[in-house]
Image (cartoon, rainbow, N blue to C red):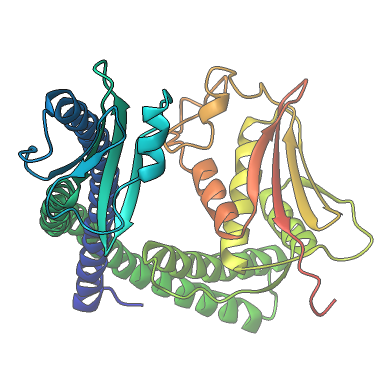
Length: 404
């Protein structure tokens, strides 16, 4: 695998897409705010206009001496005590409310009503005055509606301009915020590529020399079986380290496609336990199969076993079994256990949870964090199970029943 200009360009594309998403989210937020503020403003305006209309009609009725000179936009109907009705010139047909006029003249209190005539809306109020006359005031609401429409249109235009500005500003700010992250990501990829290249060469040489040594030992007539077994182990370890290096390079590139296959956790645990010198107990009558990346799962189980072996007093137990649709790997030791103060953060990087540490070997607190990441990548989880003595870690993964 190589990390070069294509990876850097890929990071730049990811940063641009993230910036566009941030801009879109800012635009959506502004749109919601504009809609809410517009709705509030319209409600407030409607209430204010309604109060203004009521005041205009009441004032027109109170000041009406005759129907000849009403306020602008108002028509009047005046019913004298003798029943004679006069109306303002130009009153549109069908607008007046004769029933309300008669009701008020008879001592009633008809409510104000709205009426649409020829696509024009009117507000009508009728009151009986102390002098015995009855007045009906009719207000043309065209001007009120025009003012409301102007306000709504203005707010929509301002909102659209703000929407475009928020999208542009969000994209620009997102790009500025993500540019350092993109650069850091590119630097990380270059470091991984350089480290992978530098490690691959000595690993290849190590594997080649181990194979040559094993070949010479096999050609020896009086071969030392123990030395030959050790040579076989070195060859296997070199191959395993090369596979781990390739898996680490894949992990460093989130766009890389990782191939998965059925993996028998029981057999994997036996292999890891044998290489670590730990006691392995497999609680299963048949293979416990999950689907994943063999190298990554080997890394996860190895990290758990290595952690247990380092802190155990007398021994470590690795138990593998299936629990319904979940595969379970339990790794326990009889050591000092995990410090309760750091237990909640035990799967965070650079956190060491042992009560006692080996002063001869530095611990970085990365192994368990890698186990958590590998488990999450395989739709599983790792947890610290409460134990009376020692430490108990449990790795659970989905069982793969396809083909079995």
